[in-house]
Image 1: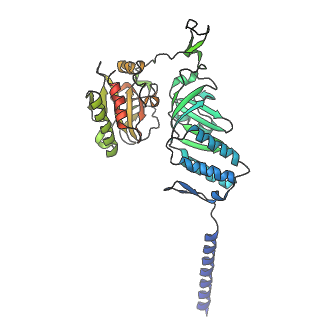
Image 2 (image 1 turned 180 degrees about the horizontal axis):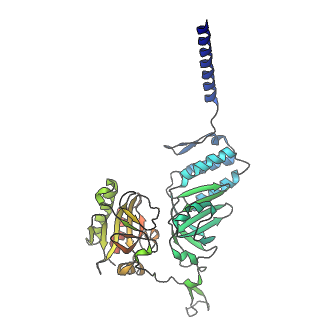
Image 3 (image 1 turned 90 degrees about the horizontal axis):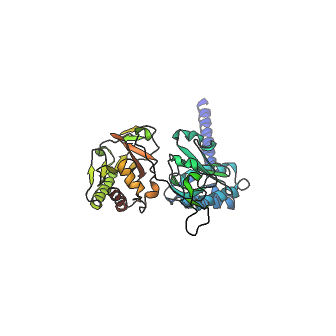
Length: 380
């Protein structure tokens, strides 16, 4: 008799567990799921307010873009303000918080912004990244509220004035929301400002009353010649590993660019154990290099920037070669000139004092046009 009661109890427990499991499956899940193959959002967000659905649609449209425009970013900011706080729940806010980085982080940006502030440390939102060093130029837009912190090693930004226009190029590394404000960070950015910007610091302008047809005392922008230093302590340096240690795909692409550069530059190049080098025709100094960087390979020296794995094109920024390349504006016609900053440099062992401006070779970059840039450097 006791055995019968035990069996009855077990059967009852099994039935209860089965019922609870079935009911749990019927409860709608209020979490956002990212459909990786299609780049779409599947969640209760689709049943939200019209403002929320418009925000989701805008975020989805950013997925295939490799370089979203600033206007697209501002549009997202406007939709955040439209949805908050009446048209979005706290749970839906958390879902958007998790979706936004997937839509924007890692994307290339090249935007014309306005200076709000320049300092040696980031604002509170990105304060954890103060270890990156350098200088921080902050853009702060209103209606929509979009804040962009650009970290750079270009000391010239200290002369920028509030509301002055500047261009920041780099990759979006961090995105976040303090509802409804949108925050973005671009580390190791190339920051430049227009030559004809009459709001530039006084040190970069001169009075030229004698110019024909110009009113007396008109301010005419003047860009001073770039000054270089040859001290080994000017920045980080890298001791490459043997080329054979790096990814075969990266090595093959770097070799392709190097061969094209030799063809275009009269075969003035040499493959070394850890890099490819183009020399200057006039003085036989190193003019440019191609190096491969992968974390865990080679040796990093000094305060190392946050570089992604890949192929890097290096253009000499000091010495006779650097003066010839930059002060003669040999790179002005290159589509890659905007990605090179002679004040943001790397050294390559064993000659750490030879400094190079650099940029990462992206998958969409044309090998022939990059090779043309290297060949031009060799003509200095």
